[in-house]
Image 1 (cartoon, rainbow, N blue to C red):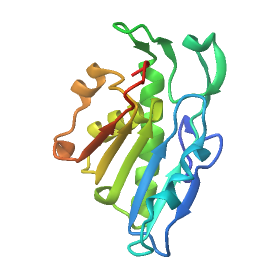
Image 2: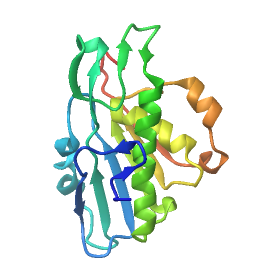
Image 3: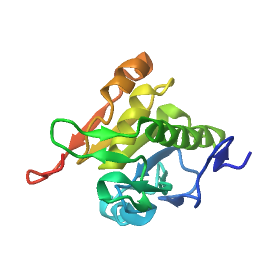
Image 4: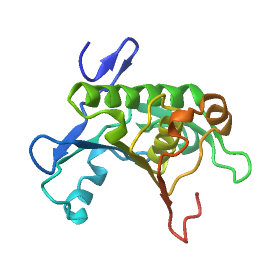
Length: 184
């Protein structure tokens, strides 16, 4: 099995990876928003001003291409289909969301194989990517180092309730969004 695939689930493009120094001890898996790609948050790394040690590996995966119903069915990079953005009845494709969670879990497993256990992995995401970070992080069977959720929402409370893992009850979560965000 390649590091980017498992039966039925494949990244169409390998993630972008950047390291702040040699032999990373920590990893941040950062998911982009709807219609963007893994390169969207690369410029964040220098802005963080992190020291070279301990080194951090940043992984920026690319969501698969899929039709997005709320965007007139246009095909774009999306972690899952959004059927409706209605304020009180947002509808999403839960199967697509679960597929994206499986893809991110592959990356967490790959980091463990490379010497960075789940407890030193942070999941970060913006908008749709933040929704995937929430679902993956809160339902992951092993403790994670943290979750960063930017301008996002809980995509499927039912999936969270059904899959919540006690292992991540104490996982630190940083959530933020702009004051003029009319989508979130």
